[in-house]
Amino acid sequence: MKKKIYESKKNFYELEFSNLGGLVMPLIIEWTFKDGSKQTDRIPAYIWRKNENKVTKVFAKDKEVISVQLDPNRETADIDESNNSWPRKSQPTRFELFKEQQMPATNPMQQSKNRIN
Image (cartoon, rainbow, N blue to C red; front, side):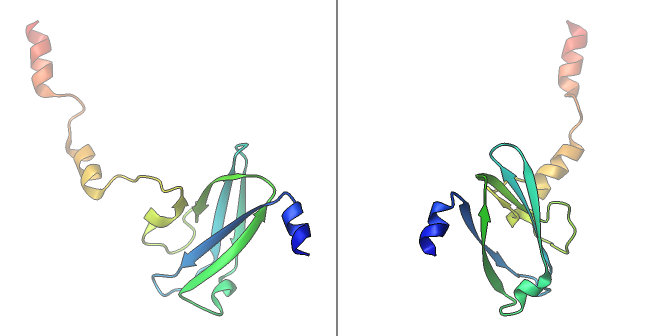
């Protein structure tokens, strides 16, 4: 049986999920493959029945996965989205977002310099 699995040419991925907020939710996983195609798996909240804090699941995929996104359409009550993707995506900090809103589109000093020339 194990030999058949190894010879099946499938790619196996083991994902571990943690429930940090205490509320069990379904798992919605978007897989992005090397060829650019995507697939979404929806796993019911029933997966948390044995352990509501941590669960591990193995997935077999025919194609090679280049990224994984948890809850891509924001359908669940997740307050920390920084840990929802592999590989990790850099997200701007709250300070960087604040700075972008406060900065003028152009520098007034440069504008006055251009008027003099």
